[in-house]
Structure formats: C-alpha cells, structure tokens
Image 1 (cartoon, rainbow, N blue to C red):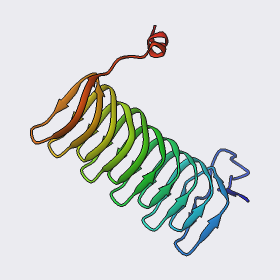
Image 2: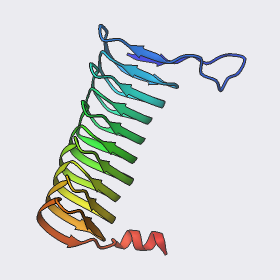
Image 3: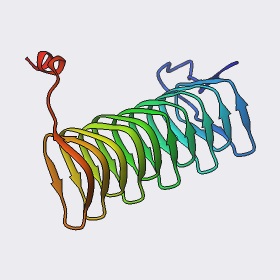
Length: 196
C-alpha cells in the first residue's frame, strides 16, 4: 500500500497547499510518500519518503526506513533514517543507521551514526553507537562506542565519551570525561584522491 500525501495546487504547480497529520488515534500500515510536511503522532509501520520535513511527535512511533529533507523526532523511530538535518529531541528515540549532514541529538540514539558535516550531542543526549562519525563532533551528553572526528572532537564540561576514539584535534573542558583508547585520525587514500 502506498499513500500519496500532500496536494499540489493546479494553478501554481510548485506550491504545496497542505501538510499531513497522522493523529495519535491512527495506525497506518504501508509506505508513505509526501511532498510537504508530514507530522506523525500515531503509529506507522512502513517506509516514509518526505521531500520536506518529517515530524514524529511525542506519541508517534515509526517502524521503517525514512528519507526526508529535515526530520524532528520527539517520539520513536525504529529504523534507518537519511536526511539533511536531523534533530532528536529529549523524548526522542532513534535506532539503527542514521545519516544526515547536520545533527542535534538530545535524546536516545543507538546504532551507526554518520554526520557529513557536524554532530552536536546535547546534555540529555545518550548515544550507544557502533560508530559515531563526522567532521566536527560536540559532546555535552554521553557517548559510548567508536567515535571518529576527522576535524574536531569537542567534549564539554558535562560531556562523557567512552570507547575507541579517532580524532584529528580534540578539545576537552574541565569536568569532561573520556575513557578508552585514542588514536590520531588518518585520512584514507580515497579521501586524499578526492581532495587532490
């Protein structure tokens, strides 16, 4: 089952006239495709593709793969997500594979996390990861797992990192906690060829 969400105005084909809300009393099984904002407060079992913003509310639960331009998660996503900007709020939970250009993580995250530009772990952020990888990683919360920062790892005064750490540059504030092994980040041969 596939649902087309969002409606285009016939007079101005590039304008979206509505957003879609799946309320807390709704349960949807099937794949969703939307061209505007989709807000989920109910339960969705299926893959979601949104060309604008996906919002999973506090009562929202999604089981499936997600692709969106932007995503804000207050509820639960059990599945992989690919987007440009991702914000996981304090009540949010995300698992499996996560990839975004920039991320702000203040909730519970497990799995494999790749930030193409930056990852900001906020004070309530609790990450248990196979790998947390980005150019710049800022940690005010807690991270357990392998951490790879190709430019900078910045651990704030309340921040905690535990695991294998590979960094080019590290900055630690007084009161921060770091446990595990640390090595210098080395540029892979493919990256050297791309930058040449």
